[in-house]
Length: 596
Image 1 (spheres, rainbow, N blue to C red):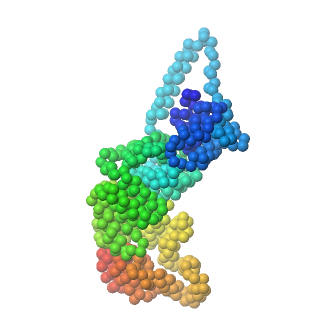
Image 2: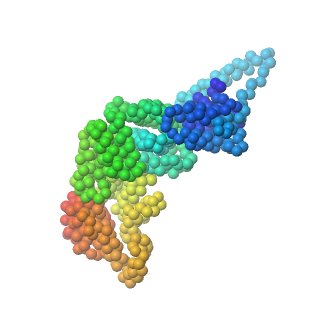
Image 3: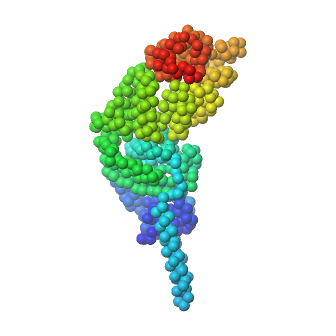
């Protein structure tokens, strides 16, 4: 069969475009089920064996053939509304294969016009056909008139059948998101949020509505021996209509070239041009190790394994900047490491990444965090954050941390704008949302802060950071009943009655001291202090001496959130104490003490 469009029942299959349509409306079908349909339609009424399908669809790729074939057949039947028990289109031939059993439809022939009356109608018909052809050509060649300003790249689908290739799919997704983040005037949803939709069975319009985007990029990865093929398409999500699609194929050892082709092609759909000639091609093995490291860091949340893979990548290619930027992220918040030590290691990796490639935006953002938290050089930190955003407008971490720096300096309008931008780029990141709430809290916009903390807890009810932030906001609002209710969930059941009794008799003053003791107990014997929350709780409880004692410990430990001391509402009870002004001066915030 060599017809371009094959029609059966209410369906038609455009073999050239690779599209299945029902009544003219495109039906989304994954590549393997679609290829099976093509094979069956090539031999209508004849048995196509399972072995033939395996050979033609999967080749020598290592997969669980039976499972993959059965799954693909089920998806194909689902798309056609067919049933294995009472088939209308695809019949299962036991222990042999499958057969397409529906009759194929031909086009209806045009009516025969008598010769005597044919000349004028034929001329009219010819003109009409010419007009149709011109209009159709214009529609095919023109760019979409609908402007897309926001985009989500969904996790690329692994069609290889091998779990070991997940990191390739996730790596290509991440690098495409990162590359598109350089396109100005285009808001690209971050990887953290995009990965929430991995294996999601949701219609594209619903995903677009949840993310607040207009366009969606979908991709699928296949592997044939040493070759990797990526099918990618851009969809107008609100209308669920295809705007552009293409296919790319490269050797598995040349993923960087594949990445460049994808970035250039997708960016071109938005009128943006990349010049990949300046991009340094890393060692292929090093890039594979880096992609695996990103997978373990972002997906598995295992910094130890990620660091090991980043180091292996550097052993293969010492001039590769990206693994150094990855190590900066690992070290920045390494568990069970003193904050100062972690920041010193992070600084070394960030500076190395920038020395190798000053265009790596994430390295500048990380260095900005070092300048802010380690050196407390706020002017230099701001320069690094702004440089990161200049290099990559869609850099979530740069907007996120820059917003926190601006809050620490009391520049609240700017801080909230940057924090909102980060939240729009990564709407499912609980840390980004919580810190957006913190910017609002520092600005004394407590109701708005509470709304953001509740947003975090709706995503993750067990998020302890957002829970404690919420209680602090309640404290500023003097909603003591809600604080007590929250504290009751954090202490042993046998102490809850005592807490309730203390609140009834002594009011919130007693509760504040109880709260201070709870948070102090966790860090009393720790070798370093990670947070100023203990000092803040004692300030609220009216215990100035213990509050300043914990502030001194925080200063000695180089605790990161000490930089927010000038704007933290919890310290208002001790703000007039000369010791407080002295602490601000030591931190380098003396000029920011009036930020509140």
